[in-house]
Length: 299
Image (cartoon, rainbow, N blue to C red; front, side, top):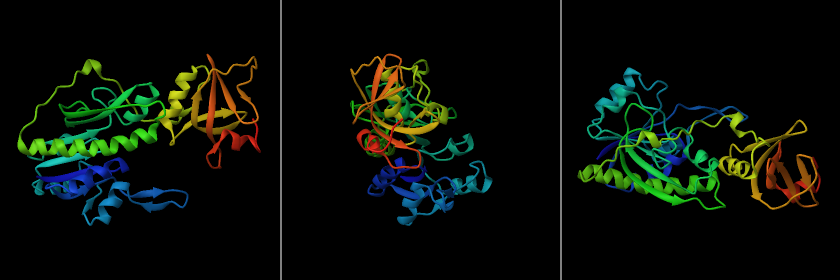
């Protein structure tokens, strides 16, 4: 099939790579506009655009997805299918262009975790499984009819980074399988049950702040769901620390301080006990273990 592939984040790269080795034709790639990034404010591409350029694909980077020139280019492409992975919300006039419709790869088991940060929220909420879903796009975000899903177990030592890595590769396989089924015409659609839907809104700075009135498990799951980036943030004595890794513990103390330390360990006082901090990152410094931090620092 003739495909226009749309995406921006690194999550989309394995999917495009998988399609390159298939019998489908990628007409061109659509990605977010270039922008200034980093301390030097250097103009850079999105991760997907960088990969596409290296593989000699034409890349369109419209600022406005309703731009008439952009829509006309999509129409004249005669694409069979638009494939969307980690991109923006497509307007109705774009969705209706391809002959076979527009499909999306989403990093959750829809209708659970509709929104911009599905992996984050699955971990923050303490889920024991997650997965990927392919579905046909419609006007409302993440609500279309489901093509395929694949589940994975969330292990105790998983965090945002590890689940992201697993799902981007599993998702690529599921996406290709979905496209093959659409081409062959042998597929069944499952309507989403909106009563089971849960939100996965964009992660904000406020969400990243550790609230010590929460339980140890709630804070532990917040750390997992934000690690390694953007990371959960602890503010102590007017200083900010990114908390990268924690561990549930039976440690107890009569100490009333928010932080209790030994020579090698750091314990954070929560609403129901203590949580051990395994790795942290002070402002302007590298990530270090609790023991490394305590060799020359204190709270």
